[in-house]
Length: 440
Image (cartoon, rainbow, N blue to C red):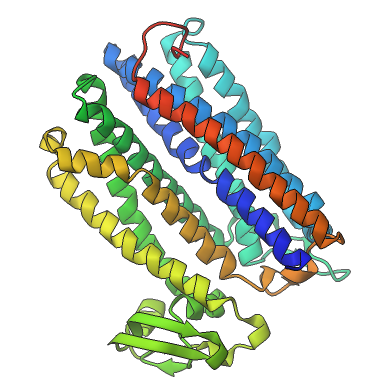
């Protein structure tokens, strides 16, 4: 494996691991703010207990997310130095705003909130978690703005053969960013909803802390269903948008090889990149791809054969990831709808409770598949149309990257085991009234 693939593998490993903690930080911070606001407005102790219980899990998740995020950014200098030099004038300001404004605010007020239960008034304490929630989500927005620029570069000039920021407003209002931001944030809230439902189901199955976990389950269900619907709707428009800005990615999503009007979708297909076609095609839906891409069944959709080989993404992993994402996501949405219809008696259905307990990892997997579609589908570009991935790696030996990749896997495995054991212990333990602000 050459240095480019090794560097990509290391960045992918670090990114996938880091993103195990990001969605819960984004969504759970909002739920904590809502729960504590209910406590401040009503004075009901069960809302305070709920806030402290979920806050204990949130803090563990937050700490690991910060640590893994810092090491992820180091790789821009160690493994992707040529990329950093090439796009630093555009990429740097976006990450600088995220670090100096959003992350600084988030990390400051998380300490105020964690340590301020007996030191601040209830209103000020609730305000601190709202600031954490807002800063965490704003931080994600700036990271996604940077990623959107890589997917669809705008607002730059090329005075000396490298991009220089010329229109900051254009970068911030990048059309690709709007899809990127809303889709990722909505998916994160779905992850949070499933996590809250799964942990709540664990206690409801044991018929303990019912006053805490019955409302927690229903809150998680509402969040998961609402944002699952938004993900589906926004995902459709995202696919239509790709037809205009990244036609190669759209063609890879559906393994569409021949440019044609009334482009079909096949329910079952097996891509064969060597023969530039599909070795298996079953269940044709005539015009479906044209309709999805251009809202007209008669529209012409560009096929992969009309895109130079060197500009095509790897079709098989993109196609498989997208199919799994859509099929499993649709089944998950159907389950949420059924659960919503039974929400007032869900605690008496052991089948549904066990199902949601076991499905905690599912939305995490779907998020990973989504990032696979987005990032692998962009290849061979690291900055779409401007810089190829192969030109972005640092001038280091492949053996050095192999060693660091192995070290990353080992260290992240250890961190992951510790983090998930701590979170599982905190979740299974349930609300604790003594032993400090979080009973740790």
